[in-house]
Amino acid sequence: MRIMKKVFPVFLLLFVAAMLLAACGGGTQPEAVEEPEAVEAEALKVAMVLPGPINDNDWNSVGYNGLKEASEELGLEFAYAENVADADAERIIRDFAARGYGLIFAHSFSFGDATLKVAKDFPEVIFMAGTAQEIAPNMGTYDNPDYQGAYLAGMLAAGVSKTGVVGWVDGNPSPNMLANLHAYEAGALEMNPDVEVLYTFIGSWFDPPKAKEAALAQVEQGADVLSAQGVGVIDAANEKDVYALGAMTDQNYMGPENVLTSVTWDLAPLVKGVAESITAGEWESKNWSFGVVEGSVVLAPYHGLDSDIPEEVLQQVNDKFEAIKSGEFVVPHDTSEVE
Image 1 (cartoon, rainbow, N blue to C red):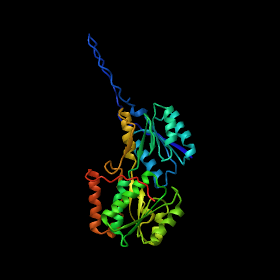
Image 2 (image 1 turned 90 degrees about the vertical axis):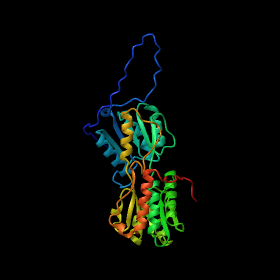
Image 3 (image 1 turned 45 degrees about the vertical axis):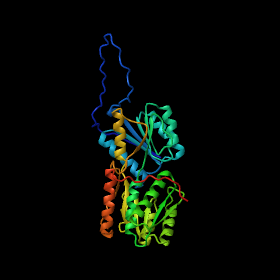
Image 4 (image 1 turned 90 degrees about the horizontal axis):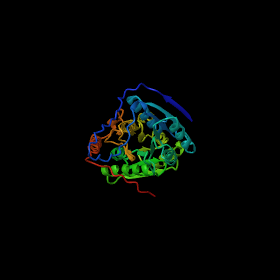
């Protein structure tokens, strides 16, 4: 586990709150309305606790890059801890709180309980935990609504497939991943009502050999497009020369001739939005969900492979993206369990 810190010049203007006291005279003063306290921008320090390495080009890279970009833009001091095990999460989060970090992101599906324990002991600190099941007055949560992009990926997969069979390989059936799978299937069915969607949960968030094995098995069953929700799937696509759709970051570099595009997630808008709400005294304890509308979820460039996509398919995918962005179409958020 490694902890690093960077300090940047402060560019954000101070938020100054002032209250004007009226002369009492003989009248009765109105009752004061309690408002969230604003925090001076230059005083806010931000930290993030990550379960893996910041250079994984996946979940942890998205977290770190979003933290760095937003903090630099706002002129905030920031720090991070990477490769933090679940057993150490509470200790690391507590240490950041004790050191004066006013906003702490626990960037993992499994850090929610640890964050809640620390939040109760530091009521003046704002905590944000990834997909936490329980929150508190000073603790919110945030999700990764990449299911919105998964719908587009499903459309693209079914539109490109020549066999009428597409695949999807992931780690565990968490609510977020179930929403992703169902949206992928729904998008595929919109494009081709007869498409068959194969799916596999390998039972681990990181097991490249097992993910590759599952993907190869789907190719043997006819899948010629694979949604790569874990490391190892793209290796299988390269080996069997079928198409793959990356996740989280632009993963074309892993298979320049096979990775058509990727459903990417940019965390910077969310980090920035949360920080600005704190300095403005407007932060709310809720689920903060930044997706297509907020510019956080998009499809990565095609890197020239759009020439392999039928023009009408590409147009339908682009039109659907614009419909989601405008609010004309809302991607179903289905987290129902699968067999």
